Length: 164
Image (cartoon, rainbow, N blue to C red):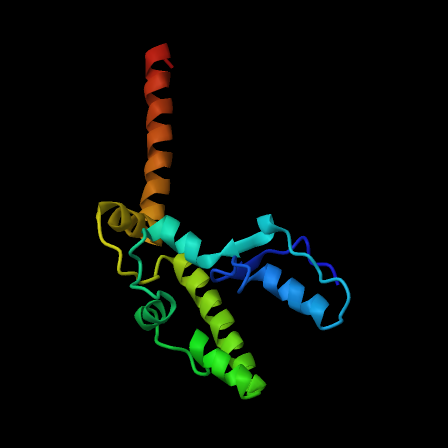
């Protein structure tokens, strides 16, 4: 099943010991044949997006759990990395699956909140404040109507100059 045209949102899955390459290797090692390849340009690291937009201090390290707490709390079923390793060793695969689902659901909420301008971060500064201010619908509406007014005013003044 090819999904080369899809984007794959992840959280720091770029290491050989924990990442897409590791999953591909494990797939082959378990005798499943050649693993489906996910092109690097189709992998979106949500942590990198958040750092680029809100700065390196958008949440304290390790970031995922503090960031979850800022944005609605730790989801039901969430396991930390160490807890997932322990669950794997104890063959508690359903708990691991539920943890993965809770993280995917959290990623979806983060993206939705970021698009709506409602994402909470620990970032401070004028740049972040201005970004948040101009993400809201009211600011966009004011900008839109100001642009329309400015265009109409320019047309009016232009017509006055040519004597119409």
